[in-house]
Image 1: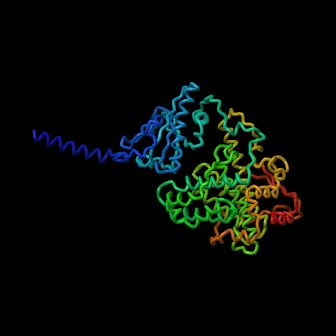
Image 2: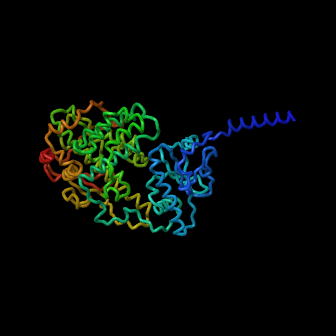
Image 3: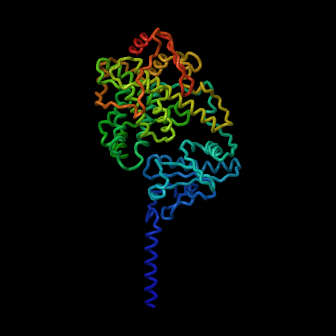
Length: 513
């Protein structure tokens, strides 16, 4: 009997060793606070404990269509997305029942702290990452949070992926805009509030993808450089200036982690929401972010106008452009958006490499104006591309817009900007940009404005991101005889460049703005 008990004891010891050695899950002990969707409120979202092994819905042979969110419980993006995902899961099932669709779609989630090894195998670039898996199929599509803005919108996307059209009665919000109201006008206050909110959102949601501090080297330097340029180019009376001042003064705290950043941002937080104009076309964040970039672009010209006799204090268009490019590469978490922007920037689209200069000695207003006008073109190129993508994804939608009506600004907001459909006048466009993206209270004397801004730190000169060298040609804005010159934009073929005034008059008028 003793031998039998000894044998059984030894057998269980060996068995326990084998299980611990070869069958150990990602976590030996499940910590329930690391999971979002185990409660009853999230009953429609499938989630498994790490101790149960790899979730079955990640297997290619899984028989149902499923949406899977990969998240980390500490991630602010994920915390904010949690309730939206639960709401979407419930609404999706209700719509499928309401439309009596012969369709099964599951919603699921994987918590990547306990499921560390599982998530590592997917090589995720950030949290939350959302993937669409087709039934019994290895086909996987990455989704964005905006793809889940509503169940009917999602079913349109699913139909495009599977080739099956679901009659949901859905029309994208932009498809239903009246032709005369596609773009709503905004006040200066709304524009700067939208920009502040998007800067605030970006700091809250995009800077940190882990609990670790910012990496020393380029990642950290890119952020500090961009914040410094923002402080120099944003109007001194704008609500963002105190925030930018604190971010730079306490940069060590800002770069130490999410908690340190939150403590610096909190006193400057705006407790409001994006303007109706910004929210009209989907997400207020994107609209406000473009506003921030346009404010920067106009502020670059204003800053250089305030330093006419001191080239050392001036900024160059190449310097500003590279700072914006690097910031987008490191801190904008929309992978598709980043890929498009970097491709166009690095490929010198919109004639960037000839229009931008690293020469701070130039005191030519027309050279400085190239940056805000280039950004205006880039912005409209995105508008045109998104319209085409929307039409491709919603082929049966009643889109009332033409390619010219998604070009901004509309004629009723800037009559002097447009010569004819698709042809615009550069000085009129720049004047309009400076009126929209600058504050009247900042039209002060040079010495007052200089005192409002701190003296910038010296920066090293940079090249065009290691691109193939091209001759530096600053584009003349008119022919030598003063007659207009036209140029067709190669990227979207919508714009032509046209001057209706003498170049000397342009310099005088703009310097007085």
